[in-house]
Image (cartoon, rainbow, N blue to C red; front, side, top):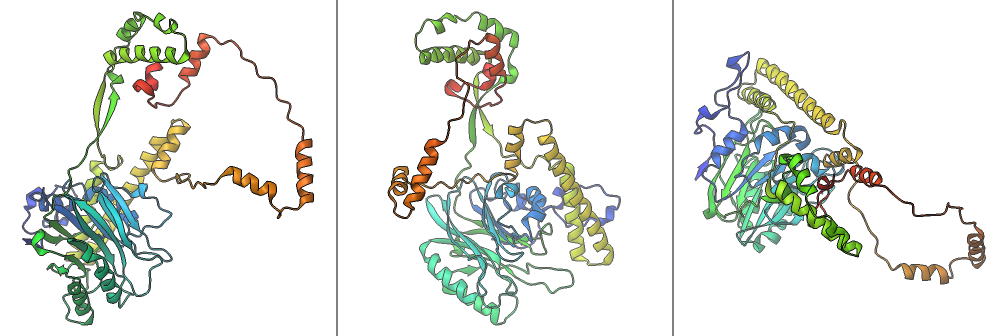
Length: 492
């Protein structure tokens, strides 16, 4: 079953958007998230994959957040990601997905990426060299595990400047496709299959030689003033497993259509993240203090060792809070960007509707209206993100501020490169090495032995009061949970 247009979708589900010019919005335009929900409504037991030519994930990230909310979407393949190695994945992560990247290096543009559901196991099979080779398409191939079946999933992007990538494309697929019973390849190949020319014949021959079928689609690139062309393709190893495939406009990103595939292999079920948390907000503090005063605290002093005292103390505190703030399971939700409000989504839909109308009728009036709405939407999104950042760091302690900034990819890298070596061997090398001049060695040792030790004040234990203990506890900012599920709030 194939669906190549959005005409069969009930336009009543289109979000109503107020505007001073009611005739401006085309009645045939549907927000992308609404279209995808409609396409995948009957595809609850299939592996659902889409491909977009993003023409910059950073520039269109708000559109991605607003468009790809469907729970039935399992993988998003991206051509022209325009990501750079200096841009952290945390800044462009979609809720519920992990981002797998192959960024272009050496010049602007290009790059490919895959957003894959975080609960789907994967491993990278192949990624194109960076900087890109002059006669090869950029690609990223991963192996995903669905229902105990390994599937090859890949995205390709061939820049228009690469005129003959067909040999390297065929060589790569001949090497990896036979290793899998199922293969799904999508991408922007910049070879129009509506033409009967050398390029289209070479691409079709390369796919057929690897036992891949190219699924039928209409023109996928529709730029104002240009001839429609079929550049974005879906290749599969078995058409019998294709439940549905098709395309729809993705004007939020580029003049390339979004293409989608529903493949009849059941993906794993989403695994909710469950954490145990105490309900501190529902505590009756007066009753808590009454019950605390009735506890037999002498049990702490009746034991001898410090470890036993701590264990008894923790047990008493835990029993107290099990009554007043019991531990309960909490399901962690993947929330979208907190700055992306409903009003912003409406602005994004207006902008995309304007671009759709300009694509259908590329008049100067439509172009001006689209540019005006685009600029307004971009300004609103930037301002919302700035307000969110300012609110998140305002009046926060240093630890929370840096933790928030690290979530945005700002700050020191968390990757720590450790060097493993035997320190005794290192010491032995410098103590016995002949490469070190003996005179310098003697002089260095003499200098070290003659260096005076700093005159530190003597260390003495001093008595402390209950106020000292209380002050130390209240200054603890960490909410880390220790043994016995002992939370910092429980002591404070």
